[in-house]
Amino acid sequence: MRGRKPKPTAVKVLEGNPGKRALNGHEPSPRRRLPRCPAYFGLVAKAEWKHVARDLYDAGVLTGIDHAALEGYCLAYERRVRAYRKIQAEGEVTPGGQQSAWLIVFNKADKQVHEWSVEFGMTASSRSRIHVDKPGKEASLAELLFSGVADDE
Image (cartoon, rainbow, N blue to C red):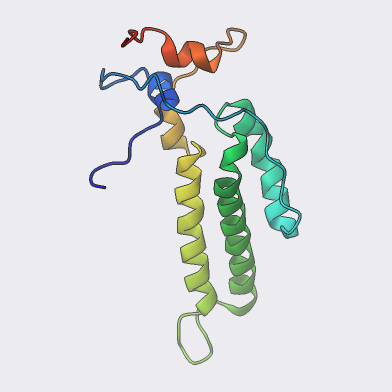
């Protein structure tokens, strides 16, 4: 597949459909439910899941089928924290003058955390492209998706 990956219709609607292209009125709409934190998580991953899952769910970004993506984010976050702690204890350079393997782990995990964060709209720049209604005026996802969409039948 070439080019940019397509944005979900809900995101296009929240952004105000800046490209003014036709919206996909038949995009799948997963059942809205808050996924459970995996039991196998370590303390750091579990704490991060609890830190972000409810906010993502309340924002309408997280559904039950997104559990694997959120797991990926939390596990990368835990790897990043673990690597950072090792770097703090052992340094960025080995006694032989080589770059610490933990620095490599940290950099890779940090990149993964950033990529997952963008997917969920958890960075300032990814959030800046999304517009939501003011508190008190709640619209259903169906209203957001299909307001102003012509019926193609």
